[in-house]
Length: 397
Image (cartoon, rainbow, N blue to C red; front, top):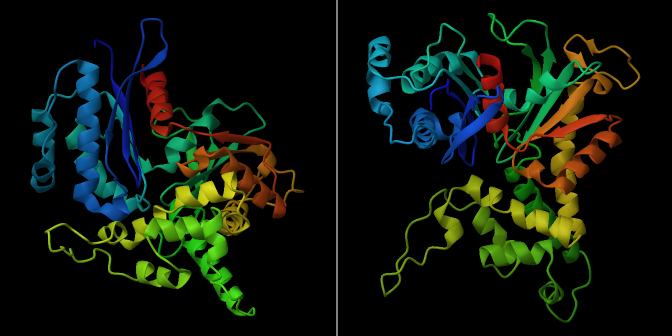
Protein backbone atom coordinates (compact mmCIF):
# COMPACT_ATOMS: atom_id res chain seq x y z
CA UNK A 1 0.00 0.00 0.00
CA UNK A 2 1.87 3.06 -1.27
CA UNK A 3 -0.70 5.86 -0.80
CA UNK A 4 -1.66 7.68 2.38
CA UNK A 5 -3.83 5.70 4.77
CA UNK A 6 -6.64 7.26 6.74
CA UNK A 7 -8.80 5.74 9.46
CA UNK A 8 -12.19 6.58 10.90
CA UNK A 9 -13.24 4.80 14.09
CA UNK A 10 -16.85 4.72 15.25
CA UNK A 11 -16.90 3.96 18.99
CA UNK A 12 -20.32 2.84 20.23
CA UNK A 13 -22.03 1.14 23.09
CA UNK A 14 -22.26 -2.20 21.26
CA UNK A 15 -19.16 -2.33 19.06
CA UNK A 16 -16.16 -0.44 17.71
CA UNK A 17 -15.85 -0.17 13.94
CA UNK A 18 -12.67 0.99 12.18
CA UNK A 19 -12.42 1.67 8.45
CA UNK A 20 -9.16 2.39 6.61
CA UNK A 21 -9.27 4.33 3.34
CA UNK A 22 -6.94 5.72 0.68
CA UNK A 23 -7.11 7.33 -2.75
CA UNK A 24 -6.97 5.02 -5.76
CA UNK A 25 -4.83 5.61 -8.85
CA UNK A 26 -7.96 6.95 -10.51
CA UNK A 27 -8.26 9.60 -7.80
CA UNK A 28 -11.27 8.02 -6.06
CA UNK A 29 -11.60 7.62 -2.30
CA UNK A 30 -11.81 3.90 -1.55
CA UNK A 31 -12.10 1.63 1.48
CA UNK A 32 -9.21 -0.81 1.81
CA UNK A 33 -9.86 -2.58 5.13
CA UNK A 34 -12.08 -2.86 8.18
CA UNK A 35 -11.61 -3.86 11.81
CA UNK A 36 -14.02 -4.59 14.65
CA UNK A 37 -13.82 -4.70 18.44
CA UNK A 38 -16.15 -4.74 21.43
CA UNK A 39 -18.05 -1.89 23.13
CA UNK A 40 -16.22 1.42 23.58
CA UNK A 41 -18.61 3.98 25.05
CA UNK A 42 -16.16 6.23 26.88
CA UNK A 43 -18.60 7.20 29.61
CA UNK A 44 -19.83 3.67 30.29
CA UNK A 45 -16.71 1.57 29.75
CA UNK A 46 -13.90 3.79 31.04
CA UNK A 47 -10.64 4.84 29.45
CA UNK A 48 -8.83 1.46 29.45
CA UNK A 49 -11.66 -0.43 27.74
CA UNK A 50 -12.19 2.49 25.36
CA UNK A 51 -8.55 2.63 24.26
CA UNK A 52 -8.16 -1.15 24.09
CA UNK A 53 -11.16 -1.43 21.78
CA UNK A 54 -9.70 1.23 19.48
CA UNK A 55 -6.33 -0.54 19.56
CA UNK A 56 -7.90 -3.92 18.65
CA UNK A 57 -10.04 -2.53 15.81
CA UNK A 58 -7.17 -0.44 14.42
CA UNK A 59 -4.65 -3.29 14.51
CA UNK A 60 -7.08 -5.55 12.68
CA UNK A 61 -7.86 -2.99 9.98
CA UNK A 62 -4.24 -1.90 9.47
CA UNK A 63 -2.94 -5.47 9.33
CA UNK A 64 -5.40 -6.22 6.53
CA UNK A 65 -4.57 -3.00 4.71
CA UNK A 66 -0.81 -3.57 4.90
CA UNK A 67 -0.88 -7.31 4.34
CA UNK A 68 1.15 -8.04 7.45
CA UNK A 69 0.55 -8.08 11.18
CA UNK A 70 1.23 -4.83 13.02
CA UNK A 71 1.39 -4.14 16.75
CA UNK A 72 0.34 -0.82 18.28
CA UNK A 73 1.70 0.38 21.65
CA UNK A 74 0.20 -1.23 24.76
CA UNK A 75 -2.44 0.89 26.48
CA UNK A 76 -0.78 0.80 29.91
CA UNK A 77 2.47 1.93 28.33
CA UNK A 78 0.73 4.91 26.72
CA UNK A 79 -1.21 5.95 29.82
CA UNK A 80 1.78 5.64 32.15
CA UNK A 81 4.34 7.16 29.80
CA UNK A 82 5.38 10.56 31.06
CA UNK A 83 6.95 11.71 27.78
CA UNK A 84 4.37 10.72 25.21
CA UNK A 85 6.12 12.69 22.46
CA UNK A 86 9.13 10.34 22.70
CA UNK A 87 6.88 7.29 22.64
CA UNK A 88 5.16 8.49 19.51
CA UNK A 89 8.43 9.25 17.75
CA UNK A 90 9.59 5.69 18.42
CA UNK A 91 6.58 4.19 16.68
CA UNK A 92 6.40 3.83 12.92
CA UNK A 93 3.29 5.67 11.80
CA UNK A 94 1.17 3.88 9.21
CA UNK A 95 -1.64 6.43 9.27
CA UNK A 96 -1.72 9.93 7.81
CA UNK A 97 -4.98 11.00 9.46
CA UNK A 98 -7.54 9.69 11.93
CA UNK A 99 -11.09 10.62 12.90
CA UNK A 100 -12.45 9.13 16.12
CA UNK A 101 -16.16 9.54 16.73
CA UNK A 102 -16.83 8.30 20.25
CA UNK A 103 -20.07 7.89 22.15
CA UNK A 104 -19.71 9.20 25.69
CA UNK A 105 -17.13 11.83 24.68
CA UNK A 106 -19.17 14.94 25.39
CA UNK A 107 -17.00 17.47 27.21
CA UNK A 108 -13.93 19.47 26.16
CA UNK A 109 -12.07 17.86 29.07
CA UNK A 110 -12.76 14.41 27.60
CA UNK A 111 -11.23 15.46 24.28
CA UNK A 112 -8.17 17.11 25.84
CA UNK A 113 -7.56 13.94 27.88
CA UNK A 114 -7.88 11.59 24.91
CA UNK A 115 -6.10 13.53 22.17
CA UNK A 116 -2.49 12.95 23.35
CA UNK A 117 -3.23 9.31 24.18
CA UNK A 118 -4.77 8.60 20.79
CA UNK A 119 -1.99 10.51 19.05
CA UNK A 120 0.51 8.16 20.69
CA UNK A 121 -1.55 5.06 19.98
CA UNK A 122 -2.20 5.79 16.31
CA UNK A 123 0.98 7.69 15.52
CA UNK A 124 -0.92 10.67 14.11
CA UNK A 125 0.25 14.16 15.18
CA UNK A 126 -2.09 16.66 16.78
CA UNK A 127 -0.66 19.91 15.53
CA UNK A 128 -1.55 19.45 11.86
CA UNK A 129 -5.28 18.89 12.44
CA UNK A 130 -4.84 15.37 11.10
CA UNK A 131 -6.27 13.83 14.27
CA UNK A 132 -9.86 14.66 15.22
CA UNK A 133 -11.50 13.37 18.41
CA UNK A 134 -15.19 14.17 18.83
CA UNK A 135 -18.56 12.74 19.75
CA UNK A 136 -19.77 10.06 17.34
CA UNK A 137 -22.51 12.38 16.10
CA UNK A 138 -19.87 14.37 14.17
CA UNK A 139 -19.28 11.46 11.81
CA UNK A 140 -22.98 11.10 11.14
CA UNK A 141 -23.37 14.69 9.93
CA UNK A 142 -21.11 14.01 6.92
CA UNK A 143 -24.10 14.14 4.46
CA UNK A 144 -24.22 17.91 5.12
CA UNK A 145 -20.97 18.31 3.16
CA UNK A 146 -22.58 17.06 -0.04
CA UNK A 147 -25.98 18.76 0.31
CA UNK A 148 -26.81 21.58 -2.10
CA UNK A 149 -28.39 24.84 -1.04
CA UNK A 150 -30.69 25.75 0.62
CA UNK A 151 -29.52 23.03 3.05
CA UNK A 152 -27.15 24.74 5.47
CA UNK A 153 -27.67 22.77 8.67
CA UNK A 154 -27.91 19.22 9.94
CA UNK A 155 -29.52 17.57 12.92
CA UNK A 156 -28.05 14.21 13.86
CA UNK A 157 -30.22 11.83 15.88
CA UNK A 158 -28.53 8.68 17.12
CA UNK A 159 -30.53 5.76 18.48
CA UNK A 160 -28.57 2.67 19.42
CA UNK A 161 -27.69 1.36 22.86
CA UNK A 162 -27.99 5.02 23.91
CA UNK A 163 -29.18 8.18 22.14
CA UNK A 164 -28.23 11.80 21.49
CA UNK A 165 -29.36 14.68 19.26
CA UNK A 166 -26.89 17.27 17.93
CA UNK A 167 -27.28 20.14 15.45
CA UNK A 168 -24.57 21.39 13.07
CA UNK A 169 -23.92 24.28 10.72
CA UNK A 170 -21.96 24.25 7.48
CA UNK A 171 -19.43 27.07 7.13
CA UNK A 172 -17.15 28.19 4.34
CA UNK A 173 -13.79 27.48 5.99
CA UNK A 174 -11.68 24.67 4.62
CA UNK A 175 -11.09 21.51 6.61
CA UNK A 176 -7.41 21.94 5.78
CA UNK A 177 -7.29 25.25 7.66
CA UNK A 178 -7.57 25.64 11.40
CA UNK A 179 -11.30 25.00 11.43
CA UNK A 180 -13.70 22.32 10.30
CA UNK A 181 -16.25 23.06 7.60
CA UNK A 182 -18.88 21.70 9.97
CA UNK A 183 -19.48 23.38 13.31
CA UNK A 184 -21.59 22.08 16.16
CA UNK A 185 -24.43 24.36 17.19
CA UNK A 186 -26.26 22.66 20.05
CA UNK A 187 -27.24 19.30 21.49
CA UNK A 188 -30.10 17.69 23.37
CA UNK A 189 -30.07 14.52 25.44
CA UNK A 190 -27.13 12.16 25.46
CA UNK A 191 -27.32 12.06 29.25
CA UNK A 192 -26.90 8.32 29.65
CA UNK A 193 -29.50 5.69 30.48
CA UNK A 194 -30.16 6.85 34.05
CA UNK A 195 -31.17 10.36 32.98
CA UNK A 196 -32.32 10.02 29.39
CA UNK A 197 -31.44 8.06 26.25
CA UNK A 198 -34.91 8.55 24.79
CA UNK A 199 -35.47 6.41 21.72
CA UNK A 200 -32.58 4.08 22.55
CA UNK A 201 -32.50 0.31 22.93
CA UNK A 202 -32.47 0.74 26.69
CA UNK A 203 -35.47 3.06 26.63
CA UNK A 204 -37.42 0.78 24.30
CA UNK A 205 -36.82 -2.18 26.61
CA UNK A 206 -37.74 -0.23 29.71
CA UNK A 207 -40.95 1.13 28.18
CA UNK A 208 -41.91 -2.35 27.00
CA UNK A 209 -41.70 -3.68 30.56
CA UNK A 210 -43.62 -0.66 31.87
CA UNK A 211 -46.40 -1.16 29.31
CA UNK A 212 -46.73 -4.85 30.15
CA UNK A 213 -46.93 -4.01 33.85
CA UNK A 214 -49.53 -1.28 33.19
CA UNK A 215 -51.57 -3.73 31.16
CA UNK A 216 -51.39 -6.25 33.98
CA UNK A 217 -52.52 -3.61 36.50
CA UNK A 218 -55.50 -2.70 34.33
CA UNK A 219 -56.54 -6.35 34.12
CA UNK A 220 -56.68 -6.50 37.89
CA UNK A 221 -59.44 -3.85 37.80
CA UNK A 222 -61.68 -6.21 35.88
CA UNK A 223 -63.64 -9.14 37.26
CA UNK A 224 -61.31 -12.13 37.41
CA UNK A 225 -62.21 -14.80 34.84
CA UNK A 226 -62.51 -18.40 35.91
CA UNK A 227 -59.25 -19.25 34.14
CA UNK A 228 -55.87 -17.62 34.43
CA UNK A 229 -55.74 -14.28 32.58
CA UNK A 230 -52.43 -15.40 31.11
CA UNK A 231 -53.88 -18.39 29.25
CA UNK A 232 -55.04 -16.13 26.40
CA UNK A 233 -51.53 -14.78 25.98
CA UNK A 234 -50.12 -18.27 25.69
CA UNK A 235 -52.25 -18.90 22.58
CA UNK A 236 -50.50 -16.29 20.43
CA UNK A 237 -47.31 -14.27 20.40
CA UNK A 238 -47.62 -10.88 22.05
CA UNK A 239 -45.18 -8.47 23.64
CA UNK A 240 -46.11 -9.94 27.01
CA UNK A 241 -45.52 -13.52 25.98
CA UNK A 242 -42.21 -12.61 24.34
CA UNK A 243 -40.92 -10.85 27.45
CA UNK A 244 -42.00 -13.61 29.80
CA UNK A 245 -40.47 -16.27 27.56
CA UNK A 246 -37.24 -14.27 27.22
CA UNK A 247 -36.75 -14.17 30.98
CA UNK A 248 -38.29 -17.62 31.61
CA UNK A 249 -41.06 -16.18 33.79
CA UNK A 250 -44.69 -17.14 34.35
CA UNK A 251 -46.36 -13.79 35.09
CA UNK A 252 -45.70 -10.03 34.73
CA UNK A 253 -45.31 -9.67 38.52
CA UNK A 254 -42.10 -11.66 38.27
CA UNK A 255 -40.54 -8.99 36.05
CA UNK A 256 -39.62 -7.05 39.18
CA UNK A 257 -37.19 -9.78 40.14
CA UNK A 258 -35.41 -9.26 36.81
CA UNK A 259 -35.41 -5.47 36.88
CA UNK A 260 -34.14 -5.06 40.43
CA UNK A 261 -31.77 -8.02 40.68
CA UNK A 262 -28.12 -7.04 41.33
CA UNK A 263 -26.03 -6.10 38.30
CA UNK A 264 -24.07 -9.34 38.29
CA UNK A 265 -25.84 -12.09 40.14
CA UNK A 266 -23.99 -14.74 42.13
CA UNK A 267 -23.01 -17.92 40.33
CA UNK A 268 -25.23 -20.77 41.45
CA UNK A 269 -24.06 -24.30 40.79
CA UNK A 270 -26.30 -27.33 40.73
CA UNK A 271 -25.46 -30.71 42.14
CA UNK A 272 -23.70 -31.62 38.92
CA UNK A 273 -21.56 -28.47 39.03
CA UNK A 274 -23.36 -26.71 36.19
CA UNK A 275 -24.08 -22.99 36.40
CA UNK A 276 -27.81 -22.65 37.10
CA UNK A 277 -27.82 -18.85 37.29
CA UNK A 278 -30.38 -17.52 34.75
CA UNK A 279 -28.75 -16.03 31.67
CA UNK A 280 -30.35 -12.64 32.28
CA UNK A 281 -28.75 -12.49 35.75
CA UNK A 282 -25.27 -12.82 34.28
CA UNK A 283 -25.41 -9.37 32.65
CA UNK A 284 -25.87 -5.93 34.18
CA UNK A 285 -29.27 -4.32 34.44
CA UNK A 286 -28.70 -1.93 31.55
CA UNK A 287 -28.06 -4.82 29.15
CA UNK A 288 -31.16 -6.64 30.41
CA UNK A 289 -33.24 -3.76 29.06
CA UNK A 290 -31.19 -3.31 25.88
CA UNK A 291 -31.51 -7.02 25.04
CA UNK A 292 -35.29 -6.59 24.77
CA UNK A 293 -35.17 -4.15 21.84
CA UNK A 294 -35.27 -6.83 19.08
CA UNK A 295 -38.26 -8.47 20.78
CA UNK A 296 -40.10 -5.14 21.06
CA UNK A 297 -39.42 -4.38 17.40
CA UNK A 298 -40.66 -7.83 16.36
CA UNK A 299 -43.82 -7.41 18.41
CA UNK A 300 -44.48 -3.89 17.12
CA UNK A 301 -43.63 -4.19 13.42
CA UNK A 302 -44.23 -7.87 12.65
CA UNK A 303 -46.97 -8.85 15.10
CA UNK A 304 -48.52 -5.34 15.09
CA UNK A 305 -48.84 -5.60 18.85
CA UNK A 306 -50.47 -2.41 20.13
CA UNK A 307 -48.69 -2.57 23.49
CA UNK A 308 -45.29 -2.75 21.79
CA UNK A 309 -46.17 0.08 19.41
CA UNK A 310 -47.24 2.22 22.36
CA UNK A 311 -43.92 1.53 24.08
CA UNK A 312 -41.94 2.58 20.99
CA UNK A 313 -44.04 5.71 20.46
CA UNK A 314 -43.41 6.72 24.07
CA UNK A 315 -39.69 6.11 23.61
CA UNK A 316 -39.50 8.00 20.30
CA UNK A 317 -41.76 10.78 21.56
CA UNK A 318 -38.98 11.91 23.87
CA UNK A 319 -36.40 11.81 21.06
CA UNK A 320 -38.72 13.75 18.74
CA UNK A 321 -39.15 16.40 21.46
CA UNK A 322 -35.36 16.70 21.71
CA UNK A 323 -35.07 17.16 17.93
CA UNK A 324 -37.81 19.80 17.91
CA UNK A 325 -36.12 21.66 20.79
CA UNK A 326 -33.22 22.44 18.41
CA UNK A 327 -35.56 23.89 15.76
CA UNK A 328 -37.43 27.14 15.21
CA UNK A 329 -41.11 27.09 14.28
CA UNK A 330 -42.15 25.73 10.90
CA UNK A 331 -43.51 29.14 9.84
CA UNK A 332 -40.17 30.91 10.30
CA UNK A 333 -38.46 31.34 6.91
CA UNK A 334 -35.00 32.06 8.31
CA UNK A 335 -32.31 29.40 8.03
CA UNK A 336 -31.37 29.79 11.66
CA UNK A 337 -32.53 31.80 14.69
CA UNK A 338 -29.77 31.98 17.26
CA UNK A 339 -28.61 28.39 17.42
CA UNK A 340 -32.01 26.97 16.46
CA UNK A 341 -32.33 25.71 12.89
CA UNK A 342 -35.25 25.58 10.46
CA UNK A 343 -36.42 22.12 9.38
CA UNK A 344 -36.81 23.20 5.73
CA UNK A 345 -33.09 24.09 5.48
CA UNK A 346 -31.86 21.17 7.57
CA UNK A 347 -30.95 17.60 6.68
CA UNK A 348 -32.02 15.14 9.37
CA UNK A 349 -29.27 12.52 9.67
CA UNK A 350 -30.29 9.33 11.46
CA UNK A 351 -27.74 6.88 12.80
CA UNK A 352 -27.41 4.00 15.21
CA UNK A 353 -28.55 0.39 15.01
CA UNK A 354 -32.22 1.04 15.81
CA UNK A 355 -32.66 3.48 12.94
CA UNK A 356 -31.43 0.73 10.66
CA UNK A 357 -35.05 -0.48 10.88
CA UNK A 358 -37.11 1.47 8.35
CA UNK A 359 -40.35 1.18 10.36
CA UNK A 360 -38.61 2.78 13.34
CA UNK A 361 -37.48 5.69 11.18
CA UNK A 362 -41.04 6.13 9.91
CA UNK A 363 -42.33 6.11 13.48
CA UNK A 364 -39.93 8.92 14.41
CA UNK A 365 -41.07 11.04 11.47
CA UNK A 366 -44.68 10.50 12.54
CA UNK A 367 -43.86 11.66 16.06
CA UNK A 368 -42.14 14.75 14.65
CA UNK A 369 -45.17 15.56 12.51
CA UNK A 370 -47.36 15.35 15.61
CA UNK A 371 -45.14 18.08 17.05
CA UNK A 372 -45.52 20.13 13.87
CA UNK A 373 -42.13 19.44 12.27
CA UNK A 374 -41.49 17.98 8.82
CA UNK A 375 -38.01 17.48 7.41
CA UNK A 376 -37.95 17.30 3.59
CA UNK A 377 -34.41 15.90 3.69
CA UNK A 378 -33.89 12.75 5.78
CA UNK A 379 -30.82 10.51 5.46
CA UNK A 380 -29.98 7.26 7.23
CA UNK A 381 -26.22 6.86 7.64
CA UNK A 382 -25.77 3.10 7.68
CA UNK A 383 -21.98 3.04 7.99
CA UNK A 384 -20.65 6.08 9.82
CA UNK A 385 -17.05 4.83 9.94
CA UNK A 386 -17.00 4.29 6.17
CA UNK A 387 -18.44 7.74 5.47
CA UNK A 388 -15.84 9.32 7.74
CA UNK A 389 -12.92 7.38 6.28
CA UNK A 390 -13.89 8.26 2.70
CA UNK A 391 -14.23 11.89 3.75
CA UNK A 392 -10.67 11.89 5.15
CA UNK A 393 -9.28 10.37 1.95
CA UNK A 394 -11.08 12.99 -0.13
CA UNK A 395 -9.79 15.74 2.13
CA UNK A 396 -6.13 14.77 2.47
CA UNK A 397 -5.56 12.68 -0.65
